[in-house]
Length: 157
Image (cartoon, rainbow, N blue to C red; front, top):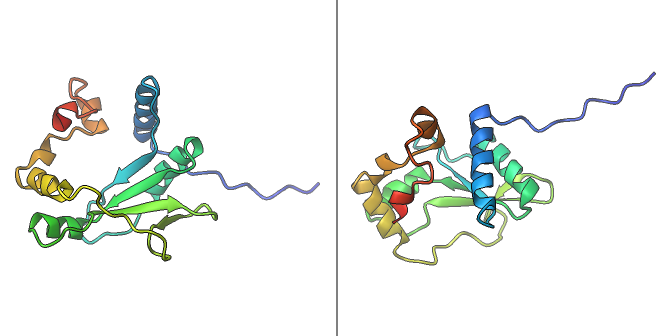
């Protein structure tokens, strides 16, 4: 009897992340909307690589939205924007290619991410310098204290 080789399975997401994705998807689906992408920020300033967890979240979203995108914060570019030295986008756009790998847009000559609204970086720099980012509630914060709004509606108003 011959056994087939084991099939690779996508790595599972962390339970908290899986729960967060389910909650986000349910919330927006009830409003007739869909999750079409994910943004990620690495902890280290000099880390500009898309990590495995971001790819797994992107893969999860891709199952439901085949044009899914992953945005990766470029901490070095963010620093330059805050200093007023750059007008470039502070995120790198990743999309899935035909080989099911996440590739940075522009790395192969395709179009790059451009800011449509010039004031985007001004608002971003203001949020950083006024430390408004400290008010952002992530899903772990919400689990620790369910009165905290994971939708961050107060930040967007």
